Image (cartoon, rainbow, N blue to C red; front, side, top):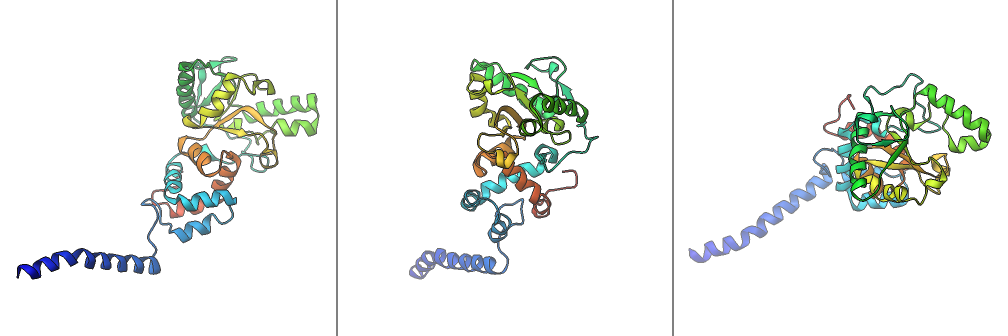
Length: 278
């Protein structure tokens, strides 16, 4: 009897392993297991979703699907307007104005003039970033923040008068097409090419993403963004979004926002916790 029990105990793990393997194989064939507890997506469904993304992005997602979905989960739980696509082809309504604008005067942030406004989440993140930069000997200077449709109209007309239509359209957004109207975009420093290479610019270039801020118009991406390089223009997207951009879209904000714009409704449908409030 002792001999029989020892044989049973020794073979039991192999028997159980075989049963689990069989069950797993059946699940994959009939009803593929979701990749993430907050999504109903299988690997094949995810691959279908990303089939039109740039090759390097598709490869990175395929190699790290759980991390990709984990970051998407955070974005889908957040405010949709933080990652809203606003560019030359996707305008905001003339009457659009964020409801939670706050003055940067209430925060420990150096500004070029009083009463600059940002959405509250962006202002709080900016304040944290400014404090961290100051610890490292860098004092951030905010020179522009929220702009209304009407204010952007004035800015655009002035730039056209100064530079002409063709050059202006590479440097200034038409009213309704500016990220500044979202209340989450910030221009730092001199708002000119002289900002590039300064200690402030270098610090932002390497650290801003950690606080949820992303460079909107990187060098060499004008064909995609529609605007020339602006080393001073950052947009608050939230930490999950900036990490998603950094890890899977290789620092290309435009590509990430286009992906989210195209697939947002599909992602909500396969996300277990999405609601109309997003």
